[in-house]
Image 1 (cartoon, helix red, strand yellow):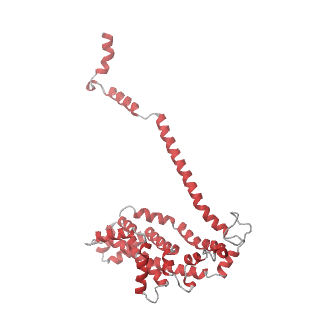
Image 2 (tube, rainbow, N blue to C red):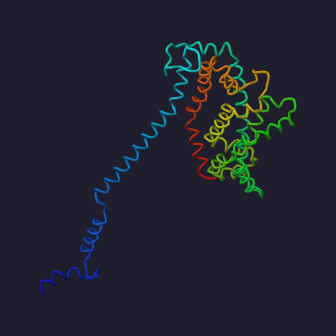
Image 3 (tube, rainbow, N blue to C red):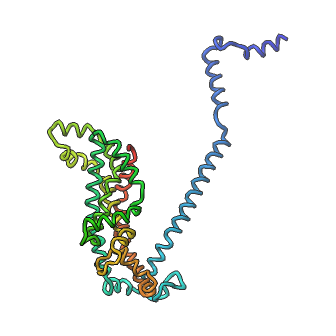
Length: 324
């Protein structure tokens, strides 16, 4: 019994009777027990690597599926054989005649100029509207501020083509002799631009208000503060707004096909409307390869512009998502 008492005595010792080293040893033993086993850590690492690999494989497959039609369109623009269908993926005979025909035998250059003019004008007006409204909602406190923001946010959730009929008849009332014109398209693309204020407002919320207060103390007006202090610090959101405002009219077909329907002068068309005419049943066999060449010409500048300004685009989106 005495030996059992001697063996069990250390287990029944009170915590207060232990010296400092014994307490440290007990704490280290408890920490060793609480550490995860190496097998479990290896399993977590395997699951993480497996998940990343599966994600990369899925994204690679989706990228290939997305790129194949674009690459097919590109190679078909060099096809010498006519017609809308080809038995092979790559052309049997390569040529640049489709691009030559595009610039010499069609009105593509005129359509391109119309689209560029409409996109630039809409881009400038839209950027001014969006940045001004976003700055006002970010800095100026007034009674109807919250209700206006909520109403504009809700209205902005609805797609624009839902209002096509109403917009068309409003243009006929406001511009009875010019409702089917480039000015009408610029109005359509720019009039509702302020509804997309929320990303720019979120970015302006991240700019310290102390800068505005210091400028006001020095006697600067709100417009001068906005132009001289806030805008130079908001390069990324300005570029983001300009890119989005430019891409919308550049790629739009729905509004232009509705407003410009029945226009006798085909030179008034934009590239989307004019190129779509080439895909009609009566013209597709004759103009399909020309259509492919035109699609490459239209996509090249906007793709290059987006890749060049991609860094600022991402900064504008992420910066505007911080606050709202």
